[in-house]
Structure formats: C-alpha cells, structure tokens
Length: 503
Image (cartoon, rainbow, N blue to C red; front, side):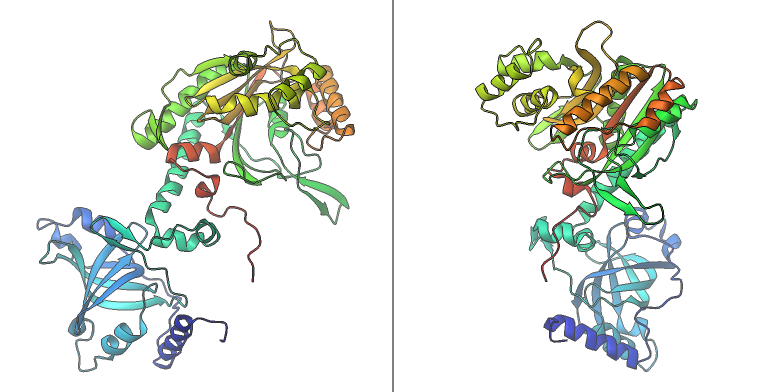
C-alpha cells in the first residue's frame, strides 16, 4: 500500500466499504443493455419518446455534478457520451436512502463503470438525457482517470504525452474518444480491401507465421527455437513465397492480411511488427496490378471520406485514378542529375560520395541504388506515383523486363514521400530464380544480414510450374496513417512496441 497514491488508497478503501455493504463491485451477471448514448441523442423526440421509456445503458462515469439530493452524471459507452440525471428519491424510493447518500455519492467515482435503467427526456437547457430509476455498480476503478475538460469547444488538460498514450492505450481510448475513430477507420479500410478482392473472386487465406526460412523479402528476421523439433524457426518477414506456392497449387487469386516481423529500427513509419496485405493473381502482370491498385485505393478513399481528396498534414493528396508513372532511373536522374543506368558498383559508390551519402562498405549494387533513391528521390513524391522498372539486382523475386535489359517488371507506390506498396510481375522461371538466390548468398557472405536465404522447397514448387503471376504487398499501417491523417505509425497501432517500462 505504501507504493499507492492517495487516490488509489482511497479507492481501495471504498471498495472495502462496498464489500461490507454486501455490494459486489465486479458482478458476473449479464447486464441487459438495450440502447446506446448516440441512438438516444439522435433519435429521441416528442414523437418517439414512447420508444425510450425503458432504456438500459452501461458505461464509464466521466464527470459528476453534485446538487445535494440529485446529481448530473456523464457516462461514456461504446458509442459516445450522454448525461444522466440521478435523483435520490428515484433510485431510493423507500425510507432507506443509503443507496444514494452512501453508495452513489460517497463510494462511486469518475472512471467507475455503472449501469443505468431509466427513461430518456430533455432537460430545461435542451439537452437530451436519461432520467435514472436504477444505478448499478458494474466495475470499480481503482486508478483515477486523467481528467480532460472541454469548455465551449476548448479542451483543457488534454493528455498528449506519447509515452503515456502508446503505453496505456486503454486509457487513451477512454479519455480521447477521437482516437477510437482512427481504429474504426482502420477496420473500414481492411473491409473495403476485402470486399474489393472478394468481388473479383479471390480467396483470403492464412499462411505460416513461424517459418524454417525467413523468405520473401530482404530483412533481418527474429529467430526462435522449436524444442520438440530441435530446430531454429523465424518469425516471417513476408508471406510471399507461401502465397506463390498456392498459385502453383491451382488457386487463381489469393490474398492475406499478414502480421510480419522485422528485427530492425523503429521510427515514425517502422514498427518491428506490422501488417501487410499481399495479393497474388495468376495470368496477370505488373501493368494490370498498377491499374487494379489505383482503382482499389480510390475506392478506399471514397469509402472513408466520400471523396478522393485526403488531407494529410498541410497537404491534400488526391487518390483519383490514374496515378502518375515514373521509372526509377528517371526519378534518380530528375532529382540528382546522375544517369546511373549503365553504372557498375564502383561507379555507383562514387555517386554516393558525390551526393554526400554515407554507405556501408558491404553494400552491393542493389543497396547503393536503393540508398540513392531513398535519400534523394523518395520524399519528392507526395501525390500517388508508381516508381517502375527497377534494376534486376534490387529484385531477386521479380521477372526480368520484357523489353529493357538489366531491369525487372516491378513498381513501388509512393505517397506523401513514403512507399506504401511493392509489386512485381512474379519470377516463375525456376532456373533464373535459383541463380538469383545464389547471388543473395554471395551478398550474405559479404556480411549483408538482410540478404535472402535459398528456399529449396520454393524452388521445387516452381519446378512443377507456376503460371505467369502478378503480386503486390500493401503496407496497411502506412495506408491507415495516410487515410486517417496520423503522423506516426504508433498512432494507428493499438499497442506499438516500446522500450521496457522503468520500475
């Protein structure tokens, strides 16, 4: 008890008092909720009041205004907030008034979850409220909530500390109702994507999270150990190679909302655990995927906002299809002045020096190009833009370009200066794929800890024959940031990864 605050001690004493009175502060029985705050406030009127004569609500006490033998309480339920009028003689109609004088006034606090049975009415000031006939304790809060006040549209004592908001998201959701709206919109984004692909006849599937080889991307993995099999296993960095196995197996189109894990740095657009939607469709190419993706994102913007124009910070981003298309070499030439199309590794390393970029000596040609584009070009693409036709060294799982030697049929979608999607005409030549994997092994031997492993089972699958296929990965977290105007990936994850809390 010595480590508890004064408020926490007082609340525990109140809990003990409730127990002495025979009141269960954490009852198990179902509470028969039959309405919501928003429905009452929206639909109650003189004409409809008969429908609201027996309402039952449950929610958290957010404020109490004591007037002696009556009080106004604001409760917050799943939909919003509503005022409740509690009068002593109504909830305690007999001689015993302890239910009001002791239990309600002295033992209930802001933050407690209570049940209200009563009827809707409009106060003299014109506010639709609930007149309580019965008040029940449903859960006693032993920690006080931060008190956020709003007066004439101005918010006071708002909790904005990111450390508090991200670590105690459960409190953030209670005291900042607008935060909940971000996650409701995130779910709507997922549902819009699902509906779009389902209507095209594609199948949502699930693939392994624990994998014997961390394939499908270039990234540093998390590793664990399986005791029964006595083998190392990896948290997946991508689900690509498993979804392509399903295309080999005869599915024409498959997609998955996948939790991926990469043991890398953390910043405003990176979390070690993140969500990607990956789609693979047989008999399509990256040109088809560009058209399909811009149509999809246009639909997502319309579903959330009713318009293709989305406000992101001080910018307005228009998701109206079609999107601009720029090749990677064109982008680098435009923003650096260097034409790197025919440069080898030594020449690229010299370019990075001239551009003032500090690159690791272990970087090969692919990483050097990626560094140039990421540092000097990426941030310029605010409106949705497809960056196309990447060098073959950057894309070990992508089909070689049908008409441009040394390139592959790949695009990344840039919006607001960040990549939110990556797509290919998928490599389905097993001999070429084996050679690309072997090149990755050479990079690994040079010390590149993000290089790909050789997945022999995937090569075996390709040898059975995979049809021409196009695939895409869309970063759901970054897409949600854009569509909800949030500056950090932590704002669109319920529980972002954080450093251990100090005792």
